[in-house]
Length: 91
Image: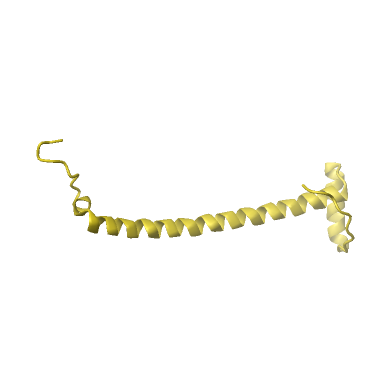
């Protein structure tokens, strides 16, 4: 993490009570508890963005593979029929 800055925020009483409860149980300061919670939220957002990106890329790659396969069948007809292109001499 980078440099820590002091900020002033207004938080509802019940949320402060929950923060204090976690702080007491974990023997951490309010600042550390809040920082941890916000850092987890940030990482969750990053994970979601990565998953979404990989899903989009996967769909694009599948689409490309289908079109490439269709083109390879046109350019290399033996590929479509299952022939391997071996010569009659068995090479």
